[in-house]
Length: 392
Image 1: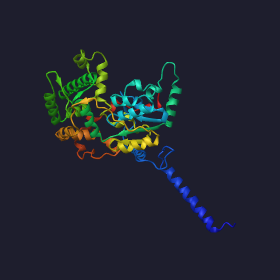
Image 2: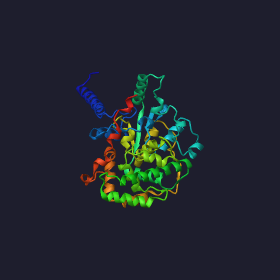
Image 3: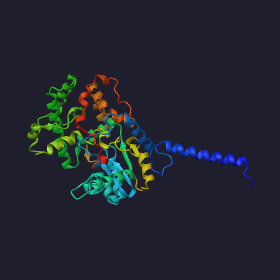
Image 4: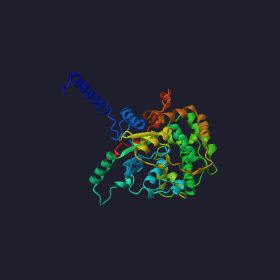
């Protein structure tokens, strides 16, 4: 049979289309899982975040008191790894991981309220799976960690920063916690916040007088007669302006009965640099390591369905029982926030502006930003810019 010029032309066209299609896939440079032909929204979001990282100052820094390796929980059966970030449904995902690993029965899932316990995650975090000890080869540990990071599919979830803050406040500082130990623990943190703001208000820090007066008013309402409560305004002030090393000798004396020794400094750091309201970038290092998938709380139903299908996980997305009783509603917290001084709201929007830019949330670039004393928000001296993911 003769090979006509029409057939030759058809072959050339088909080959050209295939070449162009392959080049298009390559040019996206998304470094996606080979099982996907078309990237999902979460994968596209991860690629966009990585691209935006080039425009962010100190993008590869972490708060030095928070080793990010501890935040990475692994599901080895699926070569899946998640950075756990407070108030982004991380508890739900941990429960799902535990179900897949066979560590939880259906009855236990219904009753479990604290899936973060170390007993569930022995050798299942980047921190404890690749731990350097006296009898380990540091080079080998580093090599294995790098190999795992490259081989595993890396996911995390983000949330509108203010929505995340409101959720953290209502969950941690309003209502009664059903766990007696946790209730005491939050009471100590409330006292830490009260004492810190009282000392800060009386200092010579160049804070606007409007905000100093607001601090004094909040202290008179919430921190009197050995009764310590935290308002949303007080929490925001604490997050913004109190440095992590504020636990001085005077603080140690005040807390000696309840919290002796060096534990106070640790508790103080945990209060201010807390996974539930510290910046998301400083907790999970989105610019230090390239994620494969970044989902959002706002699209969790869609994201969880995509990932469960992708990895062949047949369990439904779990609900996690609340640990608090009588907590304020989100609408109540938002109403209290709206009553705050406009200057304070500008500061907190600026504090979360980098998160908002990276993850695509609007409304955080204040048009009055030039009026703010940004030096007060600068905590770079408390940052550690080494790359934890690739160092021993």
